[in-house]
Amino acid sequence: MSYRLPLPLLLDAAWRLGPRPVFWAAWHRAPLGQALLRRALANPSAATPTAPWPSTAPPEPPPNLPTAHTAAILSRAAQLHATLASPPNWHGAYPASQPAASLNLFHAGDIRPIWERNRWAELPLLAQAQRLAPVANHAAQAQALLADWCHQNPAFRGPNWACGQEAALRTLHLCLALALLGAAPNPGAQALLTLHAQRIAAAPGYAAAQDNNHPISEAAGLLAIGLALGQPPLIRRGTARLNRHILRLVSPCGAFAQASTGYHRLLLDVVALTQWLAQHHAHPGLSPAARTRMAAATTLLWRLTCPSTGATPRLGHQDGSAFADLALAGPNDARPSLERAARLFLGHGAGLGPEPGCAWLTLPTPHPGKGFTSSPHWQAAGLQGWATPSARAFLRTGPLRFRPAHADLLHLDLWDHAGNLLRDGGTGAYNPPPAQGWWLHALAGSTGHNSITFNDAEQMPRLSRFLFARWPAAGPLPQGGWVRDHHGNHHSRTVTPNDNTWLIEDHIAGPFRHLALRWRLAAEDWRLTPTGITSPRASLSLTANAPLTLSLEQGWESPAYGQVKPAPVLVARARAPVSRLATLVNLTTPAG
Image (cartoon, rainbow, N blue to C red; front, side):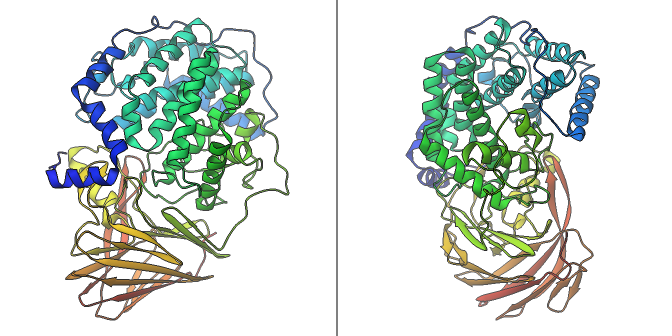
């Protein structure tokens, strides 16, 4: 997919991004920046690693674990042995021998699944299995996996050396596996960590330009490598960068620069693991100020997480990550991430049940009298939430301090207990095949969200996969939020909960000719009525101060990365001079 980049829109986006990320992005792309990157990666600082997995005495016995979790670890490890019986395809369609600094990461398909495959998530699993069954061949399997990876991925060549964040995430998984085994890195692991430190340090400008997970993950990787290798200069550099980036990108209320529940969880997982590794090596880790920000970030994700399933709204980009997943919870259950982060940053549990991942890390069992405090209404930067005994709702608000990933301002998610009744469309893929290029507009665009579009236009024009121009002015209201687009169209939304009934009021003004209000629905047996739509589970009734045309249409949603399926959408259309719409949601049969 190619994009036209008109100069006025580029200048507008640069102005909104601010001088710091624009400077670093320009530096990274400039001939001098690229030359320095190639120079930094021209000569590997260590030989090709051999035998990085420790071959020491049997590890300590495992912690006291639930029988089901022990069985799940050993079963997953057995599946992994079968999967790795054939040499893995580490590169997809990307050339393995081309210098990583010169690779185009969009021409040979979606790089995201390839990078996920190369994060070494198998290593902590095999370390767990090795402790549970020392006489089995888990250590040999880990050794063979790393040996094949090192052979197939020579230093700084191919797609798996193209991104500093991916190098950092691999590093963290390796350091976690070594810590679980109580092993210091042997010469092979030392060489492997040294190469990864060289890759992470080669392009700090690219990470700094992103203003998202990249700079935090890379700083965490440097700190973890420094701790594992006992290198004080690297420890100091990683610690300073990590603290600095957390204070810039995580607001005092806990909101993250990248408005995404998936990447918010990755933030918690990466920083919590790094803090645990620091404590494991008798290092203080984060500064008190950074720990306070991470405590707030943990609290915010707790507010967004369903306590009975661990599911979160699909706000922003969702890439299906489940990092350092010691509990084998997978990408759809954030409860282990919350429990681990709560114990490390808040000193109490998340109140979401036993968590075997914390047992592996020997984190103290929380005091039953301490925990999070629920609230019927809360606000954070970019989000607002409500809760009743039977339902919860979340509203995406402004202002936009960092670049938005989706055109989702004033999107409303409504959860009926564990059921996501009014929902976000999700992500699809970052670089889908040409035949599915429409995913980007259908899911990340305005029509992929529960909001209003004016004149069938997007909230803001898209410049590339990850960049918009002409960001709308936006802000919170006491019980909602408001947005004004670059055409002068104004939309304010308020939410009034009353247990099983929710009133959403939309007030609009501006030079628009017509508008469309969309409610993206859960898969139910929906039936249109004269004033809305109904199902055995809920009903929506719409009114306005102008004639409304209602239709039940087929939309699309992405339940997981790389997957898209049809979804029902209620669309209410009206023409100017309409100025008010109201939607009354009646939860007739709450989902358990």
